[in-house]
Length: 436
Ligand code: HOZ
Image 1 (cartoon, protein in one colour):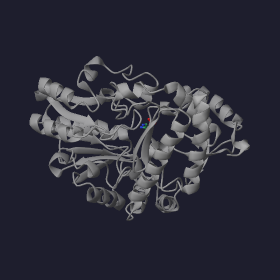
Image 2 (tube, rainbow, N blue to C red):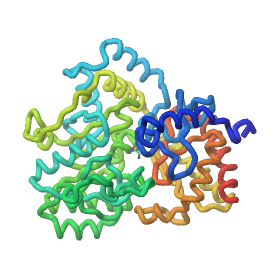
Image 3 (cartoon, rainbow, N blue to C red):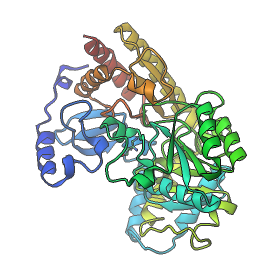
């Protein structure tokens, strides 16, 4: 680690933040970008390439945010950039049908057996919001079950006991959500199958859907315990509720298709986002034809969007998935992730810090705790103060982590030995500094 990396100059970022704060709420367009949980001010990114982002002061960071998981090939991947360039030259938006929509949908349904049809939207929030509407349309029921600490975007009924920025900023139940909307959302701790059964039995006739992140990625990285997802499937079947997997983060991120291809549990509806857009604003929901035919124009459930299926975004998504489909892509990513997480744990132990790291594919979490987190209570019991110290020590050494202990971290195919080596060398010093 060279000395010039310690205490880098970030004066232009500071000025950019001052300027932004005058006209943007809190200086940001999404609360997860503030440094509220770690202290200090956000770095402003000027450009990104491969595993790195460069701030407006010219500092380089190995990026472990990776657009919250969206960039799986690395930043500005030549194939994706070229696809975007070509598509853009033919027109940025039509608001009319284009062939790339069906092509991307074919790729998705070819990868995910539970999905026969897809509807593209522009954000994960739209995907989950629409999936719930669809479940309600399909069942004629109102209530949904969601798990504490899971985050499914910012639709009213989902901002209840929410993770991600809502947990980070202490706003798990948002202001502005009418009580009547929130009342339709029943809350259960993540990984608590018995509690889910209790709630389903109590409200069974009125539960439209159980909505779950098959790996929770908004309270760190919390995998399902053995039998949890299969148990949810069985409970939903028993009670006539639909099972919705929010794979906005895990879809094409932890494995080709998503986590459902790993765990073998088939949801009724799947939500996707992030990777399927190759870094552009694309999300989707989908499922069997028999459920999807309820969506307008075939059915009575209305949902629409000017930029849905946008030609540039579809082309970016196609280029990204084409590269991910290469043989060995996810095995290589997973091996790298495994090596990274194991070495980080050893490094923390050398500094006398208890850290649990878990990951799959290109997604992982670091929990500053002496026990493996299984739910939000466990995540909240992690040492936030130590995470803060670690975050800044890493930032000063050229590694950009999500500025919250409640977020998952990501690597990409472009995180080569040199980038991973840089992260590990920085972490060796950062753990020591956080232990002090
Ligand atoms: N969903 C992402 C966090 N887990 C970040 C997107 C955002 O809220 O800006």
